[in-house]
Image 1 (spheres, rainbow, N blue to C red):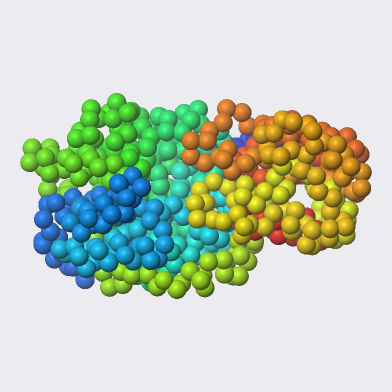
Image 2 (cartoon, one colour):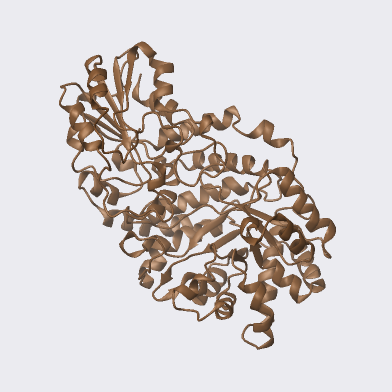
Length: 580
């Protein structure tokens, strides 16, 4: 555990202890930007290979316009009409990527159609949100950032890649490196917080972890830096909201993490939902085609966020789907996710002279380049036996535990209450003390709560059932009923120390999970007041997807540990920290 000064944000310091010092972080990032972002990375995936470029150009010369547009289209089988419809479109060269198809056998079958039944045999790239682990879940990215351990974060991404590969995934929509300064915004859970330097460290670590030293290694996957750009600056902390970003902030705050990702060799970048000074991120030619591709030198491909091409209509920036496709292609978005405006209108736009053939060729060349770098043309299929040996491997769980431990932040420890001696009689209370699912956090699509070890489980295993008196008090964090408080009182009466595990459920953070208030929800404050009234030392452990406001509760605890949502190994990690 580190002091609060080891956490990713001084803004968070303000929220919890009213000690804001944003200027020092910006100044530090400004000083270190030339050092960090001027260094060459060992990764070389972003450097074009002459051999690959020759293959790309040769293949490009054989493609029809319809096949080129197909490479620029990504679909979700559930939205597209089912796997049968996807197979037919793949067979006809109308799709270049599929997302949210999981399972080695299922992926191999659709890949077989692409490679063996389509005219040119171009393999698919299979995308999935692998945000902080695949089956083994690590702390949420905001928690990982609090560790400041770049090597451990890199290893966690490498593990996530191996587990994802075993289930057919070869492309993740991560890392999310939006500089985020409003904890009301639900997606702050996915970011590295407010500091450009720390977000850049996370970007480099995760890209290197997912992609390794050689992207063609079958145990690596393509990374995707998102959301380009300024999504974390949403006004009022409201998701998808507009942003106002002067160039001085664009270049010195929001751009450095993406520059770091490109230098680390990131294969892909995702355009953002939000408007930036009135122009949607997906339609911003200056930011994508000029700054990202030309100035920074990114030579991978840009994918839209989910239907963000179509959402330019909702922004009032595009009048219809055809206009939206025109704006996105002009801007430099190479692949459209989920919506079908490229497929429906690109040929018509080209015939009308509203887009250029060179833009389409450039987009397709970028997509093919990534597929060649991934080695998909040589090894398109997945070993279907991998999952049995890789998912939840003991080493994976060990890294998850260690990273969970390093992510925890010690905010308070009066009279050196922590750590406790083994054998201490503990009243373990609170709605997050035995929540194997909720402690995993947001964006964990492929996890299984049965793999997750809760604080109660770990306490009993280490400290003994005879020394652990459990009474959650509240069934869930938003519970306002105090019916369970009598049981809490009885547990405290038998104990020497109270450990209260509070916070927020996983559903309260993540995409479209924005809050107006940051104080604890439900009757958790009343639960802590009850614990504090009994005259015994109180340890408060906060599990949350965002920095919470502890103005009204910090005085009720003698020690405070901020654990974020720590993932699969939350229980063992917290037990190791709380006890000798």
